[in-house]
Length: 208
Image (cartoon, rainbow, N blue to C red; front, side):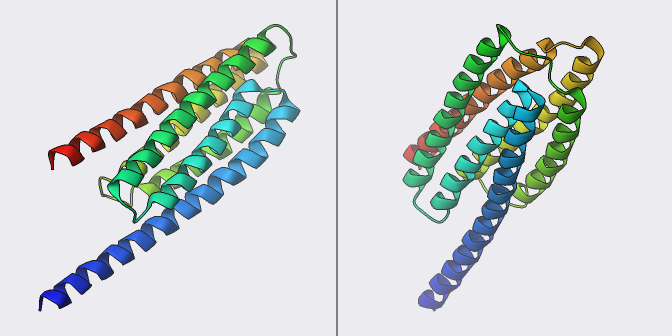
């Protein structure tokens, strides 16, 4: 009887882990696609914000890859994976801030319509990713990290649409640079939030 109950619980765990992997794999593929297209469009459009968003997607993809590795593993491994995700996002923020400063001292105005079109497409894909991630209702720290990343992306892409409109109206790269700096701040905050969730998970494990 006990063996049967243990087997049922194990099967449920395996099914849940398999579902988690499928969700993470799908959002990983979406983010890698966004990154590839975003880098090309961002470079063509001379947009720091789009390049930053593409790098953000690359960081997201790395987080999803780490989270995919952590699914079904021990809590200690999941916490280490989440911490890696947090520091990765903070590193991205520092790189993007440095790029904004470099472009501030020289660079043409970006192509506003390209910024708006790419950001709108990214926003739609982010909504799809969020809906997929929210199918998972558990307390897994890596899913929390993934949701934070994707929520940040949604805010960033709405900001890029606005920035593109301002670039068109002002014929200046300043709105794009300002948004690039805002993206770096949002990324740094997201990294800090993820590290905070990892710390909470450690405290919860210690008190259990």
